[in-house]
Length: 219
Image 1 (cartoon, one colour):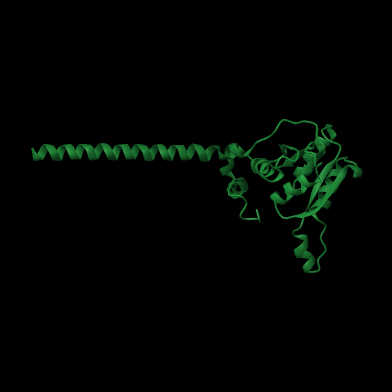
Image 2: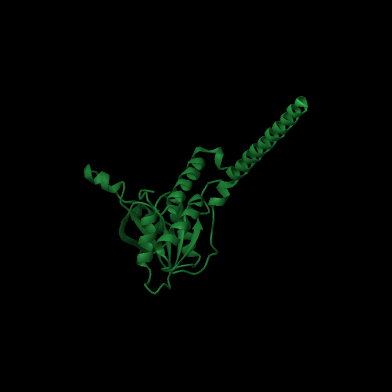
């Protein structure tokens, strides 16, 4: 009898270990699937429609401005709005070093691509991050919530841009989120280059911050 009990316990223990190993293996496989597809999940776009303006988010010169210029020439809006980044201009000014802001270079790209000067508008409020940009754009829209904007950003940044607009604009107008088509980000193989991998990590941290209610204001 004791030997039978011992054999039963050994059998139960073996089955338990096998079950745990199966669960652990499944968890690893699921984690791999999620990691392989996280780049695709970050990229979202809305169907194009006529809008009041096209907004070029700060960063990735000249890629976003080039995409905005094409949308302008395709007739989706009559204006292109630019945001004015506070940095590195403020830090350089403290050192007595002149700096043409990113909005100046974006405007030059637009002019080079044939967008008329009178169709380019620089929003006045200085911005530090994407959340500031969403607030500045929402503030510039009509108060009756009828405005529509096309927001141009990079591929990996589209989902966070949509989430921040939803949280910050609070229904003041509609945003059509579009990715610059000439963005080299490869969502299906984001782990192959350090630049794409850094984009994915940065965007996930930014999304976590947004979901948490933006406790960190520098992202």
